[in-house]
Amino acid sequence: EPPSPRRARGSRLLLALLVLLAQAPGIPAKPSPPLWPMPQSVKMSPQLLHIDVETFYIDHGPNSTAGPTCSLLQEAFRRYYDYIFGSYKKRYDIDESELEPQLEQLQVSIALESQCDCFPNESSDESYSLLVQYPVAFLKANRVWGALRGLETFSQLVYQNSYGTFNINVSNIADSPRFSYRGILIDTSRHYLPVRVILKTLDAMAFNKFNVLHWHIVDDQSFPYQSVTFPQLSNKGSYSLSHIYTPSDVYKVLEYARIRGIRVIPEFDSPGHTQSWGQGEKDLLTPCYNERKKAEGVGPINPILNTTYTFFATFFKEISEVFPDHFIHLGGDEVDFTCWASNPDIQNFMKKKGFGKDFTQLESFYIKKILDIVTTLNKSSIVWQEVFDNRVELQPGTTVEVWKSDNYFEELSVVTASGFPVILSAPWYLDLISYGQDWTKYYKVDPLNFEGSKKQKQLVIGGEACLWGEYVDATNIIPRLWPRASAVGERLWSPQNVTDVQDAYNRLAIHRCRMIRRGIAAQPLFTGYCPKYENKME
Ligand SMILES: *[C@@H]1O[C@H](CO)[C@@H](O)[C@H](O)[C@H]1NC(C)=O
Ligand SMILES: *[C@@H]1O[C@H](CO)[C@@H](O)[C@H](O)[C@H]1NC(C)=O
Ligand SMILES: *[C@@H]1O[C@H](CO)[C@@H](O)[C@H](O)[C@H]1NC(C)=O
Ligand SMILES: *[C@@H]1O[C@H](CO)[C@@H](O)[C@H](O)[C@H]1NC(C)=O
Ligand SMILES: *[C@@H]1O[C@H](CO)[C@@H](O)[C@H](O)[C@H]1NC(C)=O
Ligand SMILES: *[C@@H]1O[C@H](CO)[C@@H](O)[C@H](O)[C@H]1NC(C)=O
Image (tube, rainbow, N blue to C red; front, side):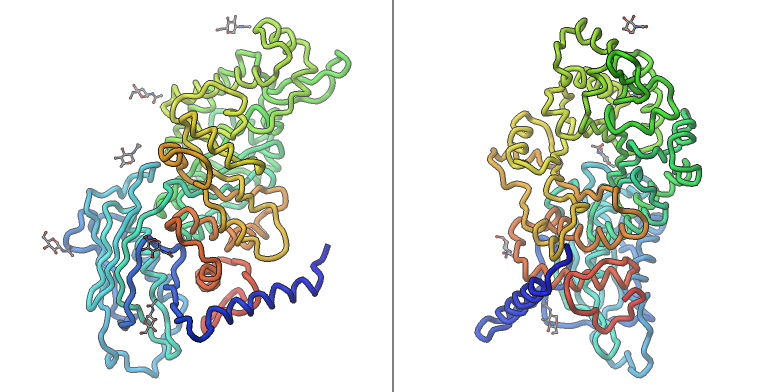
């Protein structure tokens, strides 16, 4: 249903009113620094420093243990120099040497030994401090991961005035994330996403300080992951042979993510959501019966065959070697029991095991075996909430992802009371679209707003914005994610008391224009335009 003009006018009026209130006389206009997400602590002075594009440089400081040999940092210096100055044209009608004082250099120091050749992990230190002062600014971090976050913040502080010169306020920032897990879920099964689109998504994630790409790589509809051990899975199960991720594609994604401090967690969801697996792997799925006669169809993974588990032991061995992260997402959601219930062999197996008619027990039997396989490979698991709800016996440290939109705070209470870490995604299903500024709805959720002890709240390791792919492909993934996911990004990074929606609107509008300048086709928040900047996309 198209929006009525009346409703559109209504929200415009509301906004105008809010703006008026913010600028009303008597209330001192307190401009927030145009940062997204807001750091833990920002002190900003009205003193401006000028930056000369020709002479300014970013380099490792003398005390840095991660020096010139750290290619991750050198690459980041280049990248951020381009973000800051790249899209601008130098104006020659100003003698910049006359403008003083001038910021000459950004010195980046890493206190502890370099992690340049490592992958970020669940306990990576992303904290940093940034002191912008004349004539050299200092960015200090314990690890390269914090330096990456600090470079992003520094780049957001620099702005161009109406004469075209670059300025930065003298400032002092101390920052670290509120939650260690800040994810984006992409779904490459419902629609294939070209590698370049995944890389673009990783760029935008870095601009918003996200640090986990949850790659829901396969599902019922297609199996684009090219397995070295079981090449027939993608040969038969992908949409076409040009809709697959080869080992070199996967490597490209992993490396691009790594140098931005982003972990990649693959999801191989089972026993449901697996129709595409059946095409390339005989007997993996359960044959469904109709009136005790074998019908055409197949259902979830067949949990009663030993061959199922030998297959998964081999398959997950490969996955554990291809994906360096300590975590693998095993899915376990939305298992349809109809097919299992129709199959006489499964009925017999249930009887033998004493499961009665309770198919959740069969599902638990299956998931337990898969979890054990992954544990043997020295990896930890993430599972959707049903696995916990169905009382599967979980290894300590198995992380539960809460996704069901009803009573998710209650679910957070129950899961954390049992001692398991949780990731919250229930309020952040970005594929569910509606008219208007739905980012405010995402923004207002506080993940810790549930009944529970301090210890329970510490088990909430973070959250995730999910963009399921039924209606999303390369044409619309970027504008659908950004800047809506940015709201989740700030919620998961910034202090709990950063909740002013009007202030967030002002900063997010600037941030959206910043993303546009950097080549991210982020959709508009509302009416308006991106001022003063050259825009390729508007
Ligand atoms: C940055 O400096 C300018 C110029 O003095 C000032 O108007 C502005 O308020 C400062 N920004 C912040 C966030 O303090
Ligand atoms: C480098 O280390 C020396 C000696 O510890 C210290 O005096 C100096 O302030 C440090 N420089 C920076 C930029 O941190
Ligand atoms: C994360 O990586 C760092 C650096 O490689 C390492 O010291 C730390 O033990 C790792 N943490 C975990 C939980 O593996
Ligand atoms: C499957 O494995 C179980 C346990 O290892 C064993 O007892 C059983 O005989 C095997 N079944 C078949 C059909 O090989
Ligand atoms: C798992 O870790 C143990 C202990 O560090 C090691 O002995 C074993 O070889 C590892 N297994 C795999 C599959 O990496
Ligand atoms: C949040 O709380 C901190 C510490 O109490 C305080 O310094 C800061 O001003 C608060 N920020 C906001 C936006 O209220």
